[in-house]
Image (cartoon, rainbow, N blue to C red):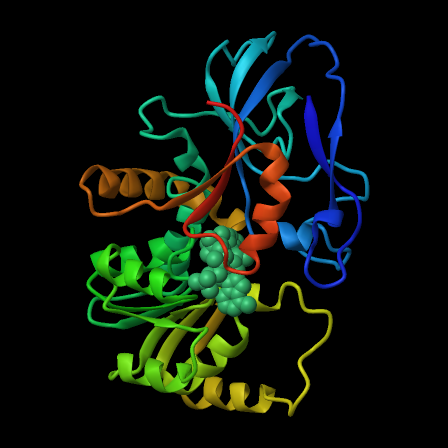
Amino acid sequence: HRRIVLAKRPQGAPTTETFSLQSAALPGLGEGQVLLRTLYLSLDPYMRGRISEAKSYAQSVGLGELMVGATVSRVLASTHPEFKLGELVLGNTGWQDHAISDGSGLSQLDPQMPRPSWALGVLGMPGFTAYTGLLEIGQAKAGETVVVAAATGAVGALVGQIAKIKGCRVVGIAGGAEKCRYAVEELGFDACIDHREAGLAAKLADACPQGIDVYFENVGGAVFQAVLPLLNVGARVPVCGLIAQYNAQELPSGPDQSPLLMRALLTKRIRMQGFIIFDHYDDRYGEFLKQMSQWLADGRIKVLEDVVVGLENAPQAFIGLLEGRNFGKLVVQMAA
Ligand code: NDP
């Protein structure tokens, strides 16, 4: 049995030294427990927050502790009344091959789900984040212009596709020509701009002739700077993530831009609202699952996964996620 623990807190970007792969013995199965084999581990940007000591909305991973993460696993043995041998379950069992659980936080996967890994992406937390952020927090309406960055990623690809279903004009921002091509040709975005190339602000203005009504904020930094002047009166900005600054160790130098932001919020009556998806499960998760499953069945949503094979490759893949090396929802496949 192998597991990956936090070895060292990163200063800036994590490196392979941040993590350590260990062998461990599995204890025997007690009463009311299940033995799980991890099939898929989800890698997500929030993990950068968990390996930092800075205070946030969730507790940090301690040094030497197992890395946290959502997983899809198969039940290998069970003395628990609710979980049967062979079933697939969604859980939070972390970066390891096997886990022993008392059933808390585990839920059975719908056996009809076309691919079990979708429980970590389109039909799981990132999908629910896109749906809630765009429709509930962002209040996107037909005819409006929606902009989203990390446009081919787990959340962004779904934000754009849902916005298209709702009749919006959708402009993506992504890293590299191939991601931009994919967003337009495969995901159906109206335009997509490469943020690694020069002239982002001017290209974004050209792609948004009617301004921006909803900016789904995934990245912050330079992309937000380009978006701010284009926001319309009454625009909504669901603040979902700020990945461009997760590895930062200090504030950027230069003049304080917050007065500009405050003036834009005031004069344009912009509503900017942060949200953490865990707060929303009680109200709308059921509705989301039903709706997204229907869109998938109707072929209205395309799913792009970036599947990395082997637990030992999780650290490199996670480091790459924070640099834009993933193309689609990043998952680690550990068994079939
Ligand atoms: P993605 O699959 O989109 O992967 C991350 C992407 O971020 C990269 O592929 C890259 O895309 C982009 N990126 C990385 N670094 C930078 C940078 N410096 N500048 C601009 N873009 C960068 O991840 P997710 O879809 O899982 O997450 C997207 C965002 O949503 C994150 O900020 C995450 O923290 C947030 N989130 C928030 C939740 C909440 O509850 N509030 C829940 C889930 C996610 P590219 O190459 O195209 O630039």
